[in-house]
Length: 116
Image 1 (cartoon, rainbow, N blue to C red):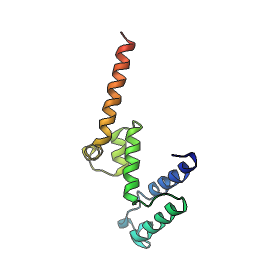
Image 2: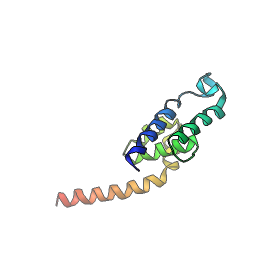
Image 3: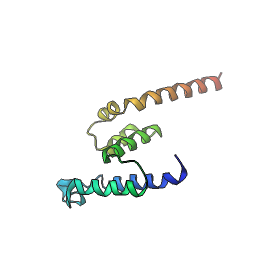
Image 4: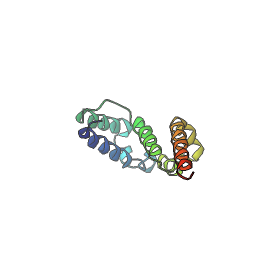
C-alpha cells in the first residue's frame, strides 16, 4: 500500500470505530437517518479517498484481522468487536490464527537455537 493511501484508510478506521458504541437502540447517531445514511456517508468517504467500495462490516473484519496479526490479545479484540465470548472471535478469525501458529513455531525455533 502506498504511503499516501494509508492516511485515508486510518481515517476510515477511526470514523467507523468512533461509531462502534453508537447502537440504534441507544438513540444515537445511527438513528439519525438510520443505517442507510451511515452507509451512504461511508461510501462517500471511500469515493473521496479513491478507495474501492466496501461494506462497513468489511472494515470491521479487516480491523480484527490486523489487530490479531499485530499480536493484540484475542480477548481485547473480542471486547472491541462486542463478541460475547472469545470463542466466537477465535472461531471467526481462525484463518489468522494459522499464520500466528507458523510465527510461533519460528519464534520457538529461534529461542531453542539461541539457547543451545
